[in-house]
Amino acid sequence: MREYPKYCVHMKKLENNMEQIISRCTEKGIDVAGIVKGCNAIPEVNEAYVEAGIKMIGSSRMNHIRTIKAQGIKTPTILVRIPTLGEVEEVIELIDISLNSEVEVMKALNKEAGKQGKKHKVIIMVDLGDLREGFWDKDELVKTALVVENELENLELLGVGTNLGCYGAVTATTEKLNELVEDAEKIEKAIGRELKYISGGATTSLPRILEDNMPERINMLRIGEGILNGRDLIDLWKYDMDYMYTDTFTLKAEIMEVKVKPTHPVGEIMFDAFGYKPKYEDRGNRKRALIGIGKFDYGSTDMIFPIDPKIQVVGASSDHTILDIEDTEIDYKVGDIIEFKICYASMLYLTNSPDVKIEIFE
Ligand SMILES: *Cc1c(COP(=O)(O)O)cnc(C)c1O
Image (cartoon, rainbow, N blue to C red; front, side, top):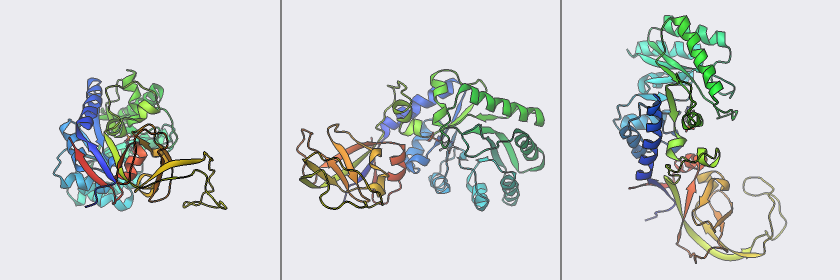
């Protein structure tokens, strides 16, 4: 039976990461929503989040929430992508808390909630400059909050939130998050009560906890990558987090060809499989291995990292990856297994590839 390519989930490491981040948040009075979109809501990961004591569990995709519900998880669910009008019925059916930025959609949610005899909680999103979802105009923000509070009887205005660093690559500075608190306080003044949550973002807001400069009133974060893979803050942001594992998930693939070949293609060079006209460096003849996985499964070759540091990922097409194994001491053979660390992007792709088997390890 075919075993590879395999996506390995290392539970003990994952549990460590959950506990490390959640405890640091809890210490600062912050409730964590565990976000599982990055790993395609692997049931064991969902369960581990619940065991670790998250207050909400969520994703950007409805099918992930369906998985969570089907597992019998009772933790409140949160949808972290603002819903389309077409999703309203499912949102009310499956989701306890949704993020929103359009009064039109919230009116539809209210109507559907009435129909299903449910109360639905909403967090209104503010755009602080990252330019993805959320209210830009502050008057419109407050006006909409008033409509939700006073006119949409089946919705509960749970709080306000923001998202930073996803499109605009804008940093979640203390100043930016203070602006969110100010916006929340404008709304509180208008509706005459305190909001339960001020939701200060995702993994990109964790530095405020690590540096102990998170505004006092931020009391919720929605964390995926920073727990699941734990690499971005270390690799990109250069935080020293020796208490985190960055190999909670690994990829294993099988070698199907080992040969010495030229490093520069031989012939007239036009376009590769993806329509690019690449440049090739001529390094003479070198020993290489082909493994049975490709860009279809993991995105691009700069998103997988061989654990054997002497292996170089040279290139790939949809279903083949070429590795340079000239410099490694290990005498790799056909049938051998190569293991890789991955990143957030390759985690997204790999867990969605029907040909990659997910296996759970201790
Ligand atoms: C994806 C997402 C998150 C979680 O992001 P991570 O980077 O995985 O922590 C939180 N909030 C929103 C709105 C998101 O889209």
